[in-house]
Length: 265
Image 1 (cartoon, rainbow, N blue to C red):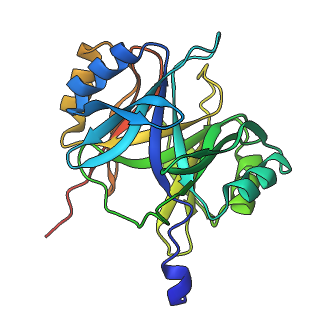
Image 2 (image 1 turned 45 degrees about the vertical axis):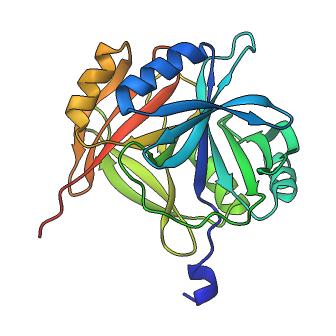
């Protein structure tokens, strides 16, 4: 690995927006669950943007969603060199463009596209230049995982579109059955994202699932259910790695929580 490839910051999820059918309910839920602060920030061309802050870091936002038939959902922003070129390539590789490349004054440039299985994500360029890697902290997003009905097509799509390579390993699914887990790695060998075959019993379309780091997966899971979340996967371990659970918030947006496994001294 050269120094040049080791320092490539692209291919990383750098932001997450919640497209919510009920922004007030979403704000109340996530504030109570993760201790997030949500503040209205004036933004040129948009109006007031509800910025999510976890600890000392801004990590995303909450945007009203009023498209009939479209449920609440999280959308992740992936850092790229060129939003226009990435969007054009996505559209010509089996994806679709939902929002064309658009400038956000003083913030950056983005688009919204889908992969061949219909999962939505946003290529993004920051106006301040590439956003460097940073270790996730408790309360912040720490991983993104694609649940898709067509892993083969998506693996080809993403490794062609982004600076990702695919590695496949075997793990157990929610029922304890062996399944393939696809890891997308960036040029610096850091994980870019993960991918799983959509469980057969799931009724959701293909989508990206964001993970939030927590101190205690079991306590957070119990609190999420008290606050009205639907639990799809109860807290369970991935040996040697960590403990997770998967939910839909009260407005229907899917998310997961993650607690790193304690490492031996």
